[in-house]
Image 1 (tube, rainbow, N blue to C red):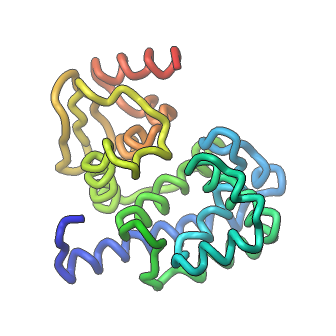
Image 2: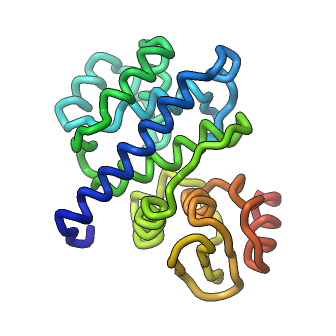
Length: 227
């Protein structure tokens, strides 16, 4: 993680808090059917995604304690399977009101999961909020500044273990250009649009392609349909 100034760190956590607040307001208005609606994450409901957002402050001790209470998690053979199992368990343990309250309770805290940086916490807050809102056809704003921070982190770590949880899309050979903030990465055919949509694409969400234009976006649309 690039060294950040105090002001940078403050801005990052302000972005996390802002998106958490937006997400809790959205969750408060959902019906029972909407809570059980499929999210953008394959095999996850809205409830599962929201429950996952309550697990963003786990220390190593918290993680081991959770696994000790739920040994079935030890049968998960991949990182994605482990993450999904924890979300399913958490969603079963809490009511929708408790899930919403638990997310709200993290606002103002600067704790984050072990083994990752606050930039991963920011990415989760932004992207998972859209995993909930987009399939429900609900508008949930993401501010361009925090999205640019998260998109830069995702671009810089796309070849590392941090990218294993994302659907693999053929991002090489394209130039990604934001139209609402000064942000550009890559070389090749252009993919242009709001930085929030680019962030979703960089985290393996083809649903963002409807908001993106350019020859590269057309190529990626075709690839997503084949995959």
